[in-house]
Image (cartoon, rainbow, N blue to C red; front, side):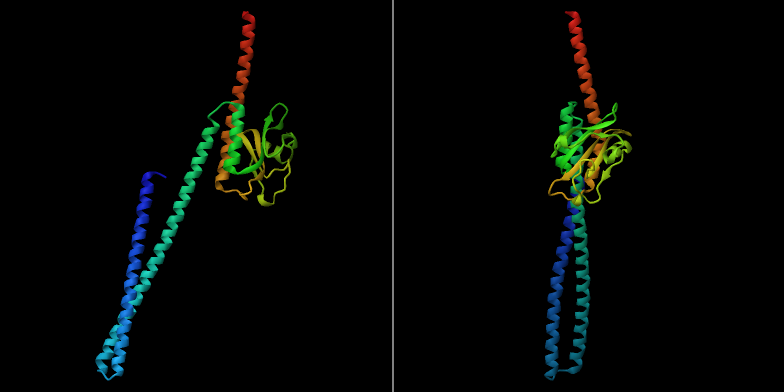
Length: 274
């Protein structure tokens, strides 16, 4: 949220509070005036019973009763306005909290994206992806599987909370994981809270895609204790991982391959020049 928007929101909040305060004060004044008039009516009625002028007392009584009714109507209108202002103020507060949450989510998405593209070191990229899945998505057990395009087999290259030996290689198109890698569609279990651990059938399966080309998948088997379901920002993070993480991994692998080739060529040149 920009400073100008925050200033406008703060000004509107102050205006709501001022109106609410004035309404409350006016209501108190009305109640006091109402009480005074009721007491005056009581005095007149007592005077009438004591032998005063029945005509003048009756007229004044009617006048006072009419004024009391007017004050009652005004009080009801003020109370209605106060309730309306309270409702608007609650809506404003809820919207403010929502905007703050959106800003935090955008900041997290930006940081995650920046971190993914801040290095070309392959292992470091995998570590950053792992931290994003733990800290931002809230997963406890998960793995990153990459596709070998020659053999068309998905193999685990990084895992958290689960041993690599428990995660078998999966052929492209086979089972849930292989199908997701083949189609490029996201998969989410309908009820994460009741999910039972199955290495071949994860709770979540997200393809790592560069445009329509899938280079691997992220599989999630368990969420942290305090997280029982996914929220909107999680799906946005999954979308980010599907694209940005795939690009970061692909770039890091190409860089590692070029470094190995360069090292090999340099060694060969050194051998020839000796």
